[in-house]
Amino acid sequence: MKYLFTKTLFFASAAALLFASCEGTKRMSKQDKGVAVGAAGGAVIGGVIGNNVGKKGNTALGAIIGAVVGGAAGGIIGNKMDKQAEKIKTEIPGAKVERVEEGINVTFDDTNPDGSKAGVYFATEKFGINDNSKLALDKLVKIFNEYPETDILIEGHTDNTGRDAYNMTLSRKRAQAVANYLIKAGVASSRIVTQFYGESQPKYDNSSSENRTLNRRVEFAVTANEKMKAEAKQEAGQN
Image 1 (spheres, one colour):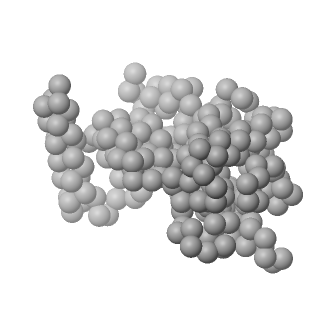
Image 2 (cartoon, one colour):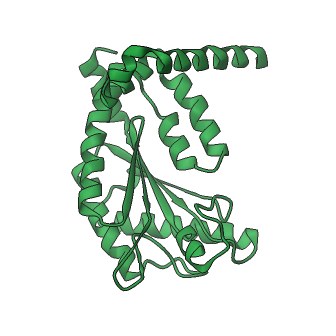
């Protein structure tokens, strides 16, 4: 079994490297590259990369890459995600939006004029949703409801203040508080999954008060749900 996995990983990696080195791909659009990568490796490459990214400290990106459909259907999904990502960028100041494969990773890394953080952040040892966070979440709710055929992963994180076990529980409460807020505002609970990692995945070194503030956060990973995947496959003739 170990040999089979190693062999599969070798050929998947080789396919990805071959694709990346082809002269023709340098002139392709992001959408075309996404389709080609999907055709070359599909979910096999996505799953392997997703696991590796998660182990390195960004499980949100790992979840997105691991959910890759690939092929022409992946290109169709990518087009829809492009529109949603652009809307988040436009309507939510402070949002850092990354389009990864067929999904969207949303974090916050900005400061309001009054010095407070723009986006979804928490006070030390707290998990309540403050007024600044509500502003960002209310805008996210509208966009999430405008694009209902997506699943939403919410990850909770803390800084390194406090003990590991306490921070793990605190990060769970933060993720759940955000999930509850979205659900109460009208986002279907069936779309939402929460995960939590305590202090194990800092975005920044916890050596300063500013950095610890940025680490007391949630992150969002937005991926296609089964309906969107099925419709994309049907449109692309992959069924």
